[in-house]
Length: 201
Ligand SMILES: Cc1ncc(C[n+]2csc(CCOP(=O)(O)OP(=O)(O)O)c2C)c(N)n1
Ligand SMILES: [Mg+2]
Image 1 (spheres, rainbow, N blue to C red):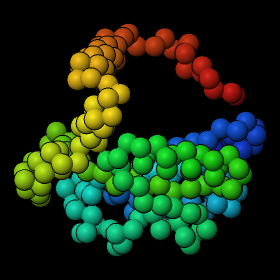
Image 2: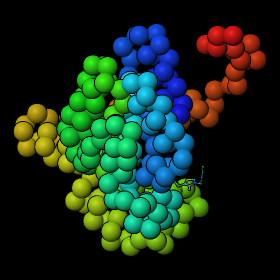
Image 3: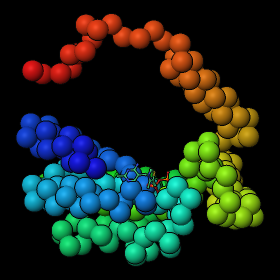
């Protein structure tokens, strides 16, 4: 969050019209540095959007057990930063909220908070046994609220795409991800001469 505020500070300084999105989880939202960043971002009207990905668990701890209030988007009120709750499982709602937040920043009004409510299907990491929630809870979310499945259904119902069109998109995405993973694992290490690339001394 401070890094995001720092990037936004540079953009404001250069007056280049850019807006920074900085993402963090519901658990991460409880760190002190978040509120230091909020204060500076509000004070200097930085063009930064703080996106809280509220997936309802902080590692293995449910939000109710880790976070004092359910409404994390209201945590900017003390700093004069507007915030809103967004249905993170609804693609169009996320797009609309993002556009509104960007317009707010571009108009010179300073930071904006979006609490995007979503759900984490997988554990926090490979060593997470997921004993803190039931399999039914996860299954119900996947079956009834999955954002990708929902948007597929809407596109098909509105006859904007066929099942085959969407399968082709799936394949294209799988290929992109496979290529990226391959690049990440097999690309040679950078030469030392790259150390200062993009760094102004
Ligand atoms: C300052 C700090 N305190 C504690 C931790 C240990 N830690 C790592 S992830 C995590 C919980 C993060 O929760 P959330 O932001 O909701 O992310 P998610 O588990 O949903 O991926 C904690 C407490 C840390 N990495 N840094
Ligand atoms: Mg979380």
